[in-house]
Image (cartoon, rainbow, N blue to C red; front, side, top):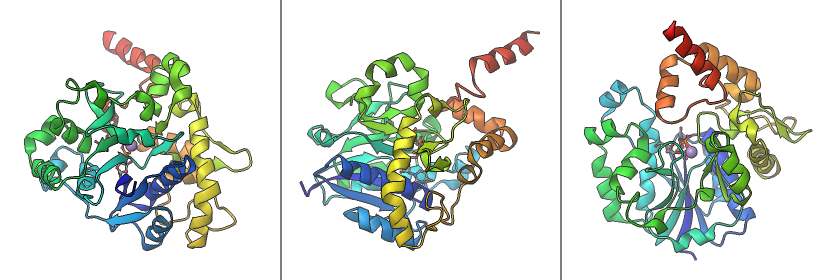
Amino acid sequence: MADQAFVTLTTNDSYTKGALVLALSLKQHGTTRRLAVLATPQVSDSMRKVLETVFDEVIMVDVLDSGDSAHLTLMKRPELGVTLTKLHCWSLTQYSKCVFMDADTLVLANIDDLFEREELSAAPDPGWPDCFNSGVFVYQPSVETYSQLLALLPSRVVLMVHKSGDQGLLNMYFSSWATTDIRKHLPFIYNLSSISIYSYLPAFKAFGANAKVVHFLGRIKPWNYTYDPKTKSVKTESHDPTMTHPEFLSLWWDIFTTSVSPLLQQFGLISDTHPHLNVVGSVSSFSRHGVFGALAFMILLYPQKKRKERWEQGQADYMGADSFDNIKRKLDTYLQ
Ligand code: UDP
Ligand code: GLC
Ligand code: MN
């Protein structure tokens, strides 16, 4: 199976932690496929060396953006450029078939059966199920597809219609996904986003036990939390949607502390007295100040505009700022 691979992407040291946990979770569940990671030069040399110990192949790529930075700035979506880097995965023609997985996904069971599917197979997006979510997809590397996707990048129309990075662009390119072939609709358990757990708890209770891949979709990632190695748990607050099912977060951290921390220590990236704390350059304020830091960030610094953007992206904070009570209160003030 040397010509098939799981592929992920990281553009910095924080997402590299996610990529490492993902790869180790794939190995833990006995994958027979190769593991490849696309990394950009912003990933530090030491972290790159750690990647090399876990992945079969580390492929250096340039950050891909739309080539239209003025327009992106106008749309106030500078991060679009970064996720578009994902498109480089079509250039890996040394493989005949691949499964791309976001660095914020975690594998809970063997998913090698995904290689029986054809391009482009993906699960529905929880926010807009007629679109697929681009966090997990089966694809076929191809010079032709790669160049056609890159050719779409400068298209203002594409970016204006889909203000959502690679996911919008890929849905536009593979536009028949929604209607043409049901075999290309992966079951949701192959890309269970944490967002769906609290937005449809009864379904999660019925089907969640079969989950094969968890996707920590959204702004706050597993590595942003504070982990208590003594209790083997993650500190979360009641407003936090992941609170509904913190086991997945604990599982992520369990792999991190057991298998990633020793590697980071080996490469001098974290201290051995606090192996659970990130002391690499890109320490996030969330991991240093815990969930109170995150809360303060949301209340004090997170502008309303950003919240509106996230709402429009289907990433509403149902249990917090966008909870029913808060929305009702807002509506009441308008009605008065
Ligand atoms: N990514 C990255 N660096 C970034 C942002 C994103 O490497 O600064 C990659 C990473 O593989 C990540 C994917 O792009 O999993 C998609 O971004 P993210 O998972 O943050 O989006 P979400 O799933 O939360 O919408
Ligand atoms: C989506 C997907 C992610 C993608 C991002 C930008 O929500 O989860 O994989 O990279 O948004 O399109
Ligand atoms: Mn993601």
